[in-house]
Amino acid sequence: MAFITLTTDFGTRQGSHTVMHGVIYTIAPDAVVTDLSHEVSPQDIREANFVVNNSAFFFPSGTVHVVVVDPGVGTARRAMAAKIGEHFFVAPDNGVLTACLRRAEAEGWPTEFIHCDKPEYWLDNVTNTFHGREVFAPVAAHLAAGVPLAGLGEPFDDPVTVPLWGATELGDGSVVGEVIYIDDFGNAICSILPAEIAHLPIPDGVEVELCGAVIRGMVSTFGDSAYGTDTLIALWDSSGYLLVSENNGTGGKVIQPCPGDPVTVSRTG
Image (cartoon, rainbow, N blue to C red; front, side, top):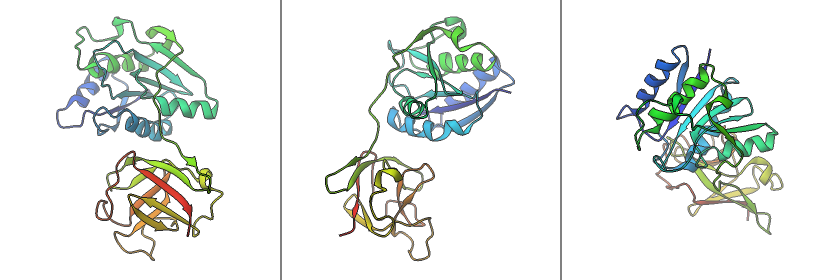
């Protein structure tokens, strides 16, 4: 059984994502197609990186992940199929897989890249505005149906990457990162990992500053009984990154962070 996931910035109102389901099932009727997300912010390649890298590798080995956040659709940018570790990806070669490639490098996973330049694996009529339907979905379906990766086109070894998030330690030991993603609760997922602030006195001896607000100490979970609703708290998110949340709230009442906003963790006082 072949698994295929879809991630796009299409939204769900127009039904474009369901058309991709239809294309896939026409070519690979036994595939199991799952939507990761169709709510990536329009043309936001960095956000797509976070969503895909945070989710894709929980699927079984051999899963084909289709990622269509493609502001360069219809231009000379390459259509790409890739193998990263034990997973396959079909996407525009525009940096949307940078986080997955960074992970592969850290984990020592093998990678392979193919330029999807064989029209026999596309739909017959290719427009300049919907390659998700006409190129990426059919290529993914053929891959899931048994066409080998190398058969989809010419190999290459220079995939496009984009600058992503990170964290920097300052001279006083403070660590500065940035907001990566705002979830549906209004929580700010920030680009600081536990190892990057392990030298600081966590949890009670640090303060987290974001959007002018200062949070003293970190908690272990939402709903900590010592904190009231809409009180700002800092904790570790399930993604592994630092999270700033309005406790038991929906975000935006105390601060309104945006991706790219700086966040600092430092010693209290």
